[in-house]
Image 1 (cartoon, helix red, strand yellow):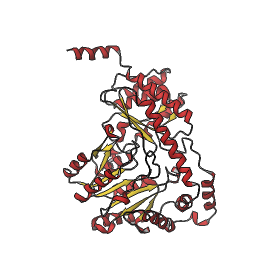
Image 2 (cartoon, one colour):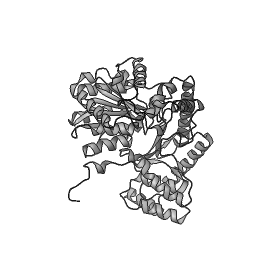
Image 3 (cartoon, helix red, strand yellow):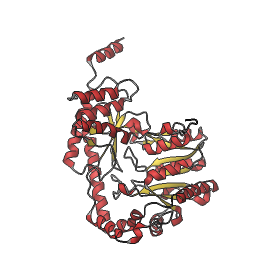
Image 4 (cartoon, rainbow, N blue to C red):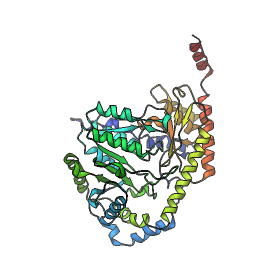
Length: 449
């Protein structure tokens, strides 16, 4: 074309969680059965929506107002309900006008990063959920600025490193965190949250908190929200119903803005997001209308508790089965419904493999993994998929140098889940032990020299 039409950040957009589906589809066409452990969709994994929840939605479908536009920022009664719910806790108070609904958090993430000045950066965790890191890098047209989460310390953020990277990167305008975390399942303590708030206060930053898994916390109680610790620092929290109800197909999420009046620049930024939403008219009406009815239903608490107990039990089962394998590091999940396994340094390389029976499947995987450019953990993920049908996500795709993979705790069939763990554990052990004898001999020779 006569002029370049490609956005400066187009090369930063990547989403391996769904990219791997293209490989899955090719394997399915070759007759393979696949167990999808890559996408956090509870419904797709077989979780049943309770009858009482369906009845609420069905009742709302009979109301004409469910089919109309709602106010640009969202259904007023729902925003009033959510503001009151927030204000019941100690911490910063918000008004209904401090809440804006979006068509899922993917929409919110696009707006939150997209309407920052291009030179303003958000420092994100590493590893982190790809939609955040990719959207932030695409907005800036440059690689992400990150702070590390430590797998040797229960995925605790390295706050000293965060402080240094904020101090020596003056373009950083905000700190982002996910709590409970995706992909690690970690839950931030009050101490960690208060230190992050203190860093933001000292360096005049705002905070972005993704709290989509806020009510899916186990192993020690509830997670503190940003609103409870933020004090007078500007910030925003992203929330939604796709994981909690779960209703991912609703594409319904919202952002709560805190302390807008404390900083005029932050207030102008918030207004730009509101104006962008106004151009779109509004977000989907029906799921917004359903929120108070579902959250206040007398069976909702027990329903959530059953799911939390199952995720907690699965997390312990996974730690017991995978934690003793030499060469891997596993931390229990404490929230959300994911776990991440980390391979120890140099445990995986480009010589390892798993036996694959079908020649056409083997040819496909060998072509996909040929060459040194592919990440070593991605090579493992492809061989695991082709050899066993288990589809996980390489940890390196979550904007980290760590090698490993993420899987879900979603399978409602416990026997099936434990069977998957047994296959996964055996595959890890076989893969790590599969290095060709010639390569092993070469390594031993080098060690002797």
